[in-house]
Length: 200
Image (tube, rainbow, N blue to C red):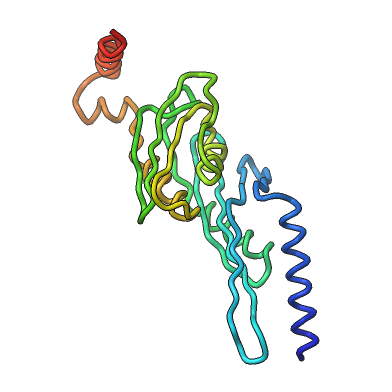
């Protein structure tokens, strides 16, 4: 029995090593959906006769056209944990409005637990200026230009959830205009006037 347990742990160790060799930013294209592995955590449960290892995976998925989601999966093997996390992320996709399909419409703040993030829209050519977990979210979302900063907790789960909290507060000009009873052209003309005043 002990020999079988050691062989099982060896197989799990080899699969973990193969996954690590493939890199943390593992992505697959399946029907336009791109998934990125953000974090893998190994957990151990002490049982009679030794330790029983398991793995928890955090995955972000998106279509790079404005839809993104994240999921968490746990299993005895790394590939199974990633598969569970990917399936959970695909079930929870949310749509985020983007300006010109490349950046955010406005600056926004998000938080979850002790993690806080600030996301700012950026001009063309800026690129994605963000940390690891947030970068994975923006790449799968399809954002090309953004500046992001995280404060507080650097836990990848908190950072991803705080980023999604911020993205949920993104509003398109059409939605804001409808809420205020204005036309989109009026709203955008006011924005240009404010930008001009700030530049002066």
